[in-house]
Each structure stands twice: as structure tokens, then as C-alpha cells.
Image (tube, rainbow, N blue to C red):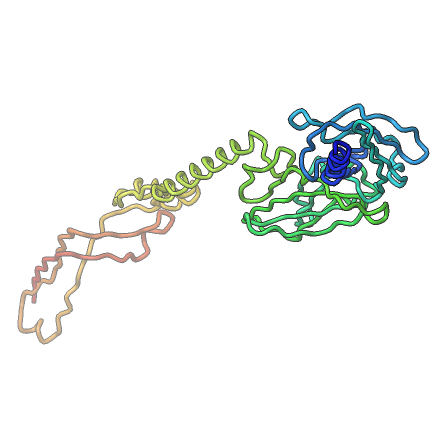
Length: 346
């Protein structure tokens, strides 16, 4: 009876005994091999882990990953970059039980996320993005960008290229971009993409841009120059309007006309030679005027005494007689008033 009971308990324990957890491994950053055995959950017991590449010596784990005090993973040094093309073996041991498994790590490589992501507005009016990747010759990239916080758009960039272009961006829009990388087909395509890089922003809201942006962040003194320029333009506009309204035209004072000769000469401001021509070169003299009365013969017979004489009382006689002319020449004259006395003799 006791023997039958022990046999039953052995069979039941064998049936309900838990299978060792499955181990999964990958190459991380081409620096170490990371293996874990908690995919089905945290195990109840601690396992001892060891691993080795093909033709290498088996080594025990030096760095365990713990979860609530239970070992759930291990990090082993990777070594040469080409070792991922070799088979990798792992062993989990608990008590007298051990489980060994082989792994192919060629397509299980996780890279660092791209770094130094920058953006530049080129001379061709296109927006250019640049970044760096550790395994640049074998890494292909996946670029995602969006405009004004809209839906992400994805674009693949072939292996070896670390540049992306957005054609003719709008200065009124905001562009946000992130990059991730993985080992490309030329070097054994990996199933793992790296984490996304830090986002970079270019456009209307450059205040939220990453510090790595090129040509999208302004120096401290640039806003000061903008303010000074605007103030200068305002002052110039005000001065222009002010002078347009108060413009003074200098007009010479027009003198009051005068009948005095020297005033007229000063007003006209004529030359000296022309002024000499205005000087008088003549003299005035009195002009005697005589008028003769012709009496017919019949009248003389009827009057015994008849005398005809003319006496002129000249009140206004202006004679222009040049100095160099003879006084015997006849001169014009004018008589304002005359008194005539006629006497006659037979």
C-alpha cells in the first residue's frame, strides 16, 4: 500500500511539474547579448544561466536582471560584431534539471536610437534633416514627420543615408520629425527597430524646437535688432509726416512799389552799367512862345489902328533839348495857358 501511494504521487508530480521557461535573446546596441525567460510571467524559482557562441567556451552570467528578487534575465558581453551570424546557446539550470537552447541572432539586433538630429533650411528652399547612427554603413532609417500636429507620415531611408528632405516647406506651418534605425537587408535585416530619436521641430512654433536645431533658433540679440528696427521705422514715418505738414517754402519778400527812382533801382537790383543809362543827360529851359495874327487888307482899311501882339504866360513847358545841340534849332514846346492882346494901327 505505501509503495502504491508513493508511485501515484510520483506520477502526479511528474504530470503537474512545470516546464522550464522559454529563453529569448537579442543583441542590444552591438554591445551585449540580452536574454530573458519571463515571457510567460515571472518564474517562481531562480535559475542559473550560462551561454556561449559557437566554438566558444561556456560562461556563466555575470549580470542578472532581477524582478522582485527573482532572476528574469541576463546580460552577456557580445564581443565581435560578426558573432551575431554564429549560433548562440543558452542553458537554464535549477537543481538537477537544466535546459539548453540554441538561438540565431543574425536578425535580432537592436540599435541605439539616432542622435544629433538637426534640421536646416537649405539654400534650395527645402528643409533638410540630418542625424548620426552608430552602425551607419548597415543601418536603414524610418523617418516619421507631421505638419501642425496632424497624423504622422512615414518614409524609409535606405542603408548608409542619414539625410531626409521636405520639399518647399511652408513658413506658416510647423514640422516635427523623429527617426529610428535598424540593421538593413545588406547586413542581415533585423526585426527590431530602435527607439525613436528626440523630436526636432521647425516652423511657426520654433519656441518648442529642440536645442539641436540649426538655423531655426535665433541668437539672443536678434529680437533686440528687430525691435530697434521697428522703432526706427516708426520714428522716420512720424518725422516724414510732420515735415510734410509743416513744410516751409522760403519766398523772397516782394517790396512795395515806389515812385522814387532810387527805390525802383534798388528793387530791380540792376547792374551798374544799366543804372548809368537811367541818369538824365539833358537840361530844361524856359520856352518863349509867340503867336502872330495875320490881318487881311480889308480889315486893315476898316480899322485905323490895329495892333496884334501875343503874350504867353507859360505855366507848364517841358522842353527836351540835348546839351550838344544848337540853340538855334527849333524846339517843341507846350503851352498851358496864353493871353493874346491885339492892337491895330491904320
